[in-house]
Each structure stands twice: as C-alpha cells, then as structure tokens.
Image 1 (cartoon, rainbow, N blue to C red):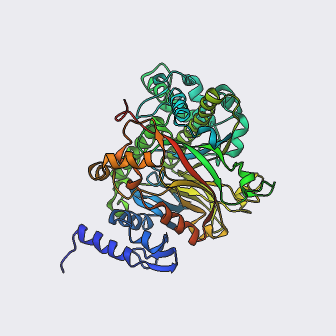
Image 2 (cartoon, helix red, strand yellow):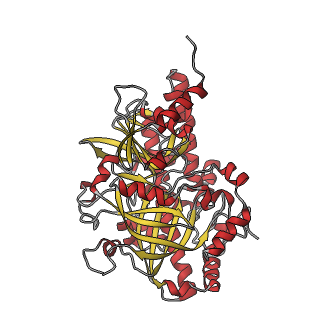
Image 3 (tube, rainbow, N blue to C red):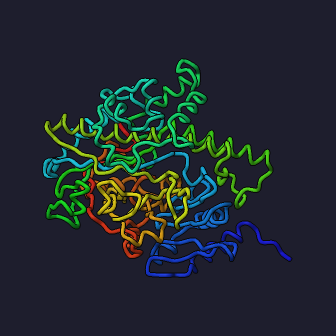
Length: 515
C-alpha cells in the first residue's frame, strides 16, 4: 500500500472543501475525517467556499476532530490561523483551547457615536486636524505606549494591576476619565477567574508579577503603559459617516435608536486588543501546555502543536482561564480608554461634541455559554457573538428586545457595517464573522500589490490617513470581497445590516511608513 504524502492529503482535503455539501445558498457542511462525527457547519456562498485555502481547511478538520469538540463553524472570512482557522467557532463542554482564542486575547471592535454632522468633517484640513489630535493621544505601532505621545492619560503600575483584576469597574473608569455608564454597552465589561471570583485573578497576578519593583513587575508596568494604544498589524481607528439602512425615523423601539446610531453623523470605529500584556500571557500559556503534552506524551490534534488543550477542572485549564481573563480585562479597558481619548480629540477640534459608546464586542475569546441546552465554552477565533432578540443571554439588558450590535469591519474603500442578529444565527452557535478576512498573506500582499495604486485608490475615495504610505499588507485588495462576505451572512439568515459606515480617515501603524 502506497502512503500519501502530507501535501497530497492537504490537496485531497482542499478538493473536498470545493465539494462541500450545500445546504442553502450560503450554507454547507464539510464532513469530518471521522464519519461518526458531526460535520463542520460552513457559512458562505459558493464563491466564498471556493476561496478557502488548503491550510484553512486542514486546520478546520484538525479542530473538529480535537478532543471534547462538539461543534465547529467555519465563517465566510475564514483563513489559516494559529492552530484553528481565523474565522471559526469551536464549542467544547469539557476542554479549553488557547489556539482558538489566539495570542491577542480579546481582540475586539468598538464604535463611538457622536452628534457631529458628517458635513463638519468634509474639508481635508479639518480631518487633518482630527488626525493630529488623535495621534497626539493614541500611539500606534508595536511596543509603543503612552510615553510616545504628548496627550495620553498615564496609567500607573498600581492602577494597571487593578485594571487586569477588575476590568472596567466604576473605580477604574473614574480613575481614567471613562464615562462609567459606557460599561452598559459592553459585551463583557469585566472577566472573572476560573472559580468565578476576582480573588483567583489577584492571586494569579501576584504569582505572575510579584512586586512592581521586581523585574517581572517592571515588565508588567511597561505593558501597562500600552493601555490606550492601537498597536500594529490590522488594528486601526477609523472615522465613519453613518448611513442608517433601517430605522431612519427615530422611535424608542427602532433597532438603530436602541443602539444609539445617528444617521448622517460622525462615528469612530476601533479595532485592537490586549497588546503586549495579552501576547505575553498567551505565549506563556502555549509554552506551558505544550510542555505538558511532551511530559505526558499526548498526541497533538492533527499533529499541530498550536492546537494544544487542557481538560476543564485541571490546574492547566484553571491557569489558562485566569490568564485569559487578565488579558481580556486589559483589552476591555484599552478600548474604553481609546474611545475616551478619541472623544477628547474631537472636542479639542470642535468644542462641545457629545459622544456615546454604541458597543464593544470581542472576536478572540472563549465564553461560557449554553449551546444545545448544555453549558460549554464557545471559542470564537476571529468570530463575534451574535445574540438575536429574545436570547436568554441578553435578558435584563437594553438589547433584550432587539439583539445586540454586531460591529463588522470591511475595509476603508468598501466600508463597514453595524448588524443585528436574526434567529437563524442559531445554526452558527450564535456567531458571525469578524470582518472580511484576508485574501492575501502579509508577505504576498507586500510582494504583489502596487503602492501607487493603493494610495491612489484611497485618494480617489477621499480617505485620509496618518500614514505617508498606506501599509500594503493592509490594503483593501489584501482582503476578501466584503460584499460577498455580507451576502453570505445575510443569505444564511444570521444577521441583517442596520447601518453602513463610510470611512473618512484611518489611523494605522505608521511606524515604518510615516514622515
């Protein structure tokens, strides 16, 4: 018998992906390697499904066959990731997986709505003034923190310790000048430890950081200095023009009004996560659990060392859940502080501008939810929660009768959207994609895309940025067709569009491309 090479197996799996069993115009199933295992749920039109790369399919099959996994969903933005595909949902009632959370714990989206008419930012000189005011407050670039900008809000090591333990508590918000009522517009404003308490997080911080004057403590303080910053890669801040698709006539019951969206006004969309602190926690956890696999001689799912796991109730799972919570609390406050700084910048330029948080929602997190009447950990890697009206998870919130906002970024050229979930989201474990998803890897985009065309395209659409040259690996052409991705979501019955967001300027990592 001739054994197939790994490359041949991957190609066979890619061929199988192109022959997925369609169950609707934008839904399909991908059989698992084990015929007795429930198939992978695939969300995407035929065009989207045919665009999945071999690495993505291989990781999806590995993830579906991993211990304790009961559901796997592949979203239309899916592409190769870290252990599991970016753009997937993995459900397990018995195990926790670091890979389907990733190294940027609780990377998230937030949207700030202002009462400023969009006509007020029509002139380029006004937008340049806003860009200047924002970059004076919010750093961009890997490793850059408060000390690299003039008008940031400084965070001490002791306050940083409080932040990672408590999240966006009232005391934390008041200390940083964040409106405390904004926490009501957060998917989660704080996270607790593995035992459901702050105490376990406090003990974990003491173990990880120790005295703030120690070497580990000083490293922590350096991470804390990154609060209120975007970082690099695909993180961004974007000034938007809001166009309501439904609910233009204000009424207390309209979805747009409940969300606080204002037609024809300026909003600001932000994408970032837990920065150096979350990365530090995640990478340490990967190494620790991988070392355990070596000691115990446990086979890796699909032979992938990035798909390690820990059974719930073990010391390893408890340590991971605590660290994930510490990183998630950092990310939450990071976003809220960024929004407070953005509002401060607009007020510097315009005076009495009012702004309110529309929503803050994660797409790199594991949450404890009820799936198929069973308590389970829902891992969303490059996927975002989508609870519709009447979902038990929204009981007692202002979104109970509407569903919560879904913030779906596309690209500056094609825009972004605010959506709300439909009952059909049940088929995707109440999740949707977190954006368009990459079509080109970073190296390929840098190698193949033309810088002049990128900058000319943005100029043609009158979109400004803080970069002298817009990053090639972040150009619209590096991402999937956003229109096709949206069609997939809507035709699958997962969510509908409430508002379109049109970019007016973008804040990106300009450390290698600025003046």
